[in-house]
Length: 543
Image 1 (cartoon, rainbow, N blue to C red):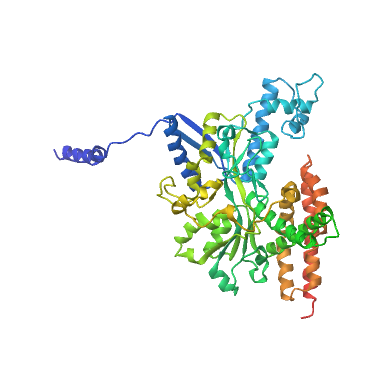
Image 2 (tube, rainbow, N blue to C red; image 1 turned 60 degrees about the vertical axis):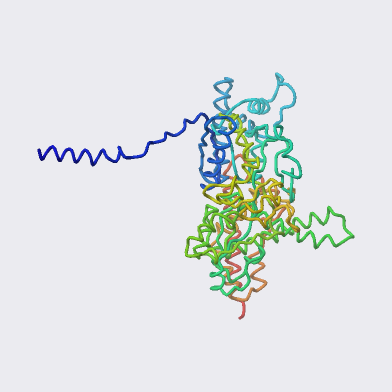
């Protein structure tokens, strides 16, 4: 009897929770899946998953789920996409077309220099034949949509033929007008003329800083220009990211250089005795050097160069660094939410984006060639550019049409979003990126073709030789900034604008990647020797 009671009690203990639990609602059966590769953070992914799911169901009566592929930053994403297309096209070329693979085919199929015009001929070059086969194929990397990053990467992917027209421009021509999504703004393209990609949200660049750290260092003024980051009091206090690993930080450095070119332009343009071509050429060459010198000094103040652009804002919030370079939404949005939870740190954190020192760059969206779920990808593009999708970027949590959980605090690309009727629902009602009075105007002809080379040089000049650079800068500051030592440290003859357009560009674009390694070793040796000499000169300076 006692044993039966024990068994009954045990059965009730185990079974009662299941009996009393509320009825379970089964998850809706997903009819469609969309595969999206992105550098966007978890908050953006969560809100766009929910927003697109609801929007798509309201229009089709079908449930959709997004399969997010998150492998790192934009640089890692583009490398992955390119390798997947290479493998996929090789299978297509050898198995479906039955043709032999070669390095000639590999080098030509995604090379924009080969442009098939008219019908194929019997004597068509192998390179042209490979390129034609790729552009006429539905070769796939297994992913539908590329969402987020910078225009530089999308322009490259479009030229290679890895992006296709989603049809959204033809579907909604009213969206692609100057009063909604302009073709260009501040010199930046906001979409591809052939509809291969289009911007969905805007980004600018600035400085996130810790007011307590500034007080500790005895710096009274908060940073208001890129030049403020070269302050000798900031030694070891600047948080930076490797520009070869982060396209957003590479863009920030490019903005710094573009601003210096424009400042030199303004100085030379006053000479009415010279024609524009002559002083523009001089402004670019000299402004380039001035910009790299400023980056060099900022790098000399760097605490580190990290692989991820998300680390500097966190370190600044925690007080481990005084200031960091970052994209605007890290300074304005997601990390300030974190700061509020760190003992009221939000009051100690500031962010400033120099209006004349940063362009408004679009974060694009595009459909990839051979998208396995093209119709859903097309719908996602439409949603992202519709007012429904745009509201997620800058509406408050809980406001009708806004996010449910995360305030993204980014700036939508649609100009009509900044109407007065939306002001009360916005997280940043006073910010209108299209209303800036003195924005930096981007000139792609100056630096747009050497962004990768610029990032490479900054890495070698500041990161690979960081110990020697920091030591030279420390000794120079101790000695009172002697001109002779500064001149040696800041000698950029080896990375002049002419060198960038010449041998540096050639080495980085060479088929043999060993050329880039050799050049990196050579340039690092030159800078290391300069920094050691500059430190010695500074120590020998009478004090």
